[in-house]
Length: 129
Image (cartoon, rainbow, N blue to C red):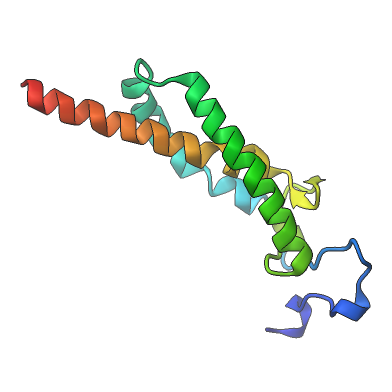
């Protein structure tokens, strides 16, 4: 790795500090990567919304979000995962950038559930015709 990207060595960082780096000008790259999924989500949701069990979807998302928040916090603390400070919004929850729990933990789970209901609807539509 180039020198400007290297995380701090263990002896050079505080106990609660996570390894990070800053490269490039600030822009919310991680958030913008979600936009294509939002465009795909709308047509899938419009077909699957009648069959979507909101409580079950919420329970699935909350379980996943709880597990992932702790797993990512652990990964950041150990140095297995590093964020570019110039590509995140800025605020962090337990050292995890805010967009992770707000965007990337709940949305992929919901997207998979809605997509599978969409596929089920299409398969049943073919069987009935």
